[in-house]
Image 1 (cartoon, rainbow, N blue to C red):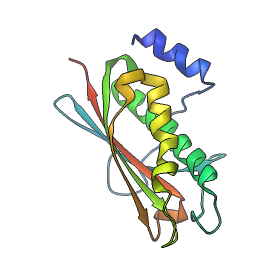
Image 2 (cartoon, rainbow, N blue to C red):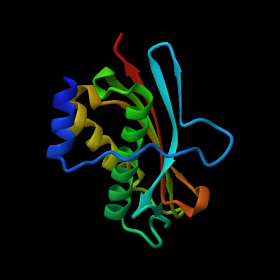
Image 3 (cartoon, one colour):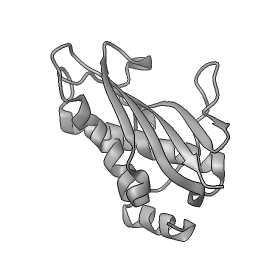
Image 4 (cartoon, rainbow, N blue to C red):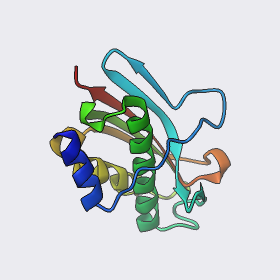
Length: 155
């Protein structure tokens, strides 16, 4: 998919990339080794602030799915800042999703679909990836979802 097609796709999906976020602690937002870019975990934000909540308690699966989609958009912003050209994305390789949830919540995979589906919508087959989704007792700043991604760049 060409750069212009990706930007057209983002526009068609009504997605505007924002400036990449700065790290909140002692790490970098992205690190590259060879053709692989590892994006640090990004927490869900809503209206510019941390999207707090616990799935199965104060949030529904659909709200969690929307939060995961928002995280994926932030990840794309960081990836764009790192590469300077989203056309360099050969594929999304791996997605790891942490869902702040109660012990009896079991729809982590459905929450994570919010990110997975967005990557497929933007990159087509190159957006389909391996994935893990975990339920956790808490996330930084009370965020409802945190996601990290590994991306392969073209030569």
